[in-house]
Image (cartoon, rainbow, N blue to C red; front, side, top):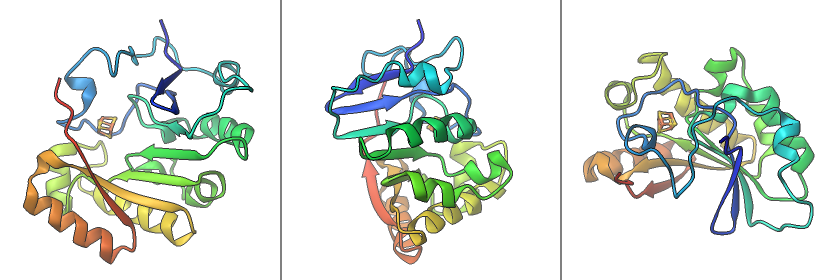
Amino acid sequence: MNTFVYEIDDNLYINLTNECSNRCEFCVRTMKDDYEGYDLWLENEPSAEDVLALISEDKQYASVVFCGFGEPTARFDVLKKIAVALKGRYKLRLNTNGQGNLINGRDITAEVALLFDEVNVSLNASTAEKYDDICHSVYGKAAFGAVVEFGKSCAKKGVKTHFSVVDCIGPEEVEACRVLSFQSRVLFRVRKFITG
Ligand code: SF4
């Protein structure tokens, strides 16, 4: 069964695709069949209408988050259509690997800044080499610079933007990422590693 939307705590999450330009070693997809009790592997990708039909007008959420197992900006047109329909009704957050400009072949950050209240970019590492070692992007070592630029660009356009890392990268790398975030004028967050 397709899980296009799911709830955790008081947030609603939107799952648009299985596709991702990374193959991160710590990705929950590689460790378990379900996430927080939800089977997020999609048999087919939803349209904007499929998703909007599942969001009840009466229900309140702290945030609506574009997340899921795959990379939401891989379906940027659908994502935008949904975000436009929900804007003003909910606080909107984008959880992304920061490769949306590469994936879409153009700079999408102005549209992201217009639609979203908050953006969380998975930074994951402090250098292109370390990023490539753990994230294995289809864009190779070019991915990291694009990820950093994506976060910087969203922050510069006025969106509340975080770079995030998973604590399993070790304390020295966490600190190096904190410094990079500070230098990039992007907020910083450390997430707990989820074990399967
Ligand atoms: S960017 Fe996210 S969804 Fe993609 S492989 Fe890495 S952890 Fe998984």
